[in-house]
Amino acid sequence: MITTQKIKIDIQNPEREIILQASDLIKHGEIVAFPTETVYGLGANALNSDAVKKIFIAKGRPQDNPLILHVSDFNQVDELVFTNDTAKALMQKFWPGALTLVMKAKEIVPLQTRGGLNTAAVRMPDNKIALALISSSGVPIAAPSANLSGKPSPTDAQTVFDDMNGKINLILDGGATNYGIESTVIDITDEENILLLRPGSVAREDIENFLNKRLNSPDKNNLKRSPGTRYKHYSPNIPVYILGQKDFSESEFKNAGYMGLTEPEIIFKERIIFNSPEDYAHGLFAGFRKLESDGVNFIIAELPLNAGIGLGLTDRIKRAAGLQ
Ligand code: TXA
Ligand code: MG
Image (cartoon, rainbow, N blue to C red; front, side):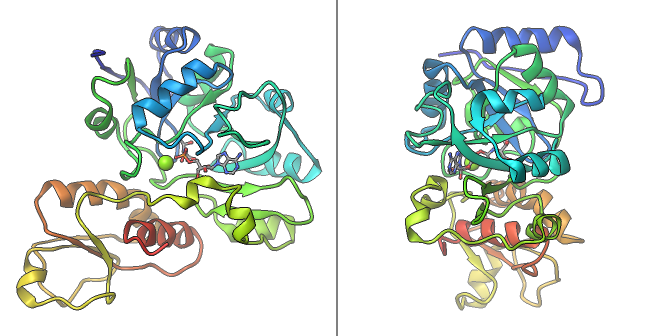
């Protein structure tokens, strides 16, 4: 069993010796968990198949679910994928940031990293620790969210520790992440038919307004190209229901937990009320885990409006409820 070290690191000014310790592990084909602005990632050298394989094993992730390659420099992108004008414009506008772009992959990206697909997903995270780690490692870092496959994504280092203790060498503890839900993933291989594969922290409207064009939804055929959307995700071990989805008795509610933007009239064992959709996104995954560990029998979650971050938030809640 590996001993997992969790080290505090300064988000504003990441300590050089800690970054060197972490990048040394990456260079040696090991895994390091690190914060991004969305959720914590489980990182390895994206160009080293054996290193990437360790991520799949640590997470228990299906092999055909591809990883995002995280870069710290715009010049790295052309080495990994075939870009186009729209992709370049999106990078300039939204990077560093929570927008992941799927483009046609170059040979250098191992099949292990891209789940056997001919495309690869790339993003530049907006987090100084992540950027320092990538540039010090000198390679793109492949990183899925740092949870066990199927569990809610971790938004703080302790949660990574809870899932990954004994499985990875190092966790960089940069405090709580900003957004709380993952990046928005779009497929930009065909500039005339840009697909929203996963709604997330960058609002769909912001991308559409910038491009002056609608993002399309993947049809059944395209769903194959977004393997992550095939699996149930983000769920705690107890059932999650959307508010109003199912009727329960008063006593059942008294043993349940509630999360939402409005105060419920029903009496719950525990409730978590958020002040805004942003706040809700920030606390959703941590809330799932907290209610579960506090021993509620099930969770009722209120859906936010389906706009802005509410789109990604709705997606995550529905997935947790097994509805999509
Ligand atoms: O915010 C995030 O995106 C976080 C942080 C760590 O960057 N990462 C994350 O990774 O959420 P993961 O592996 O949990 O989700 C990546 C998603 C999956 O749905 C995967 O199927 C999709 O991106 N994806 C990756 N490469 C793809 C590709 N070549 N084509 C289509 N979808 C791809
Ligand atoms: Mg994930």
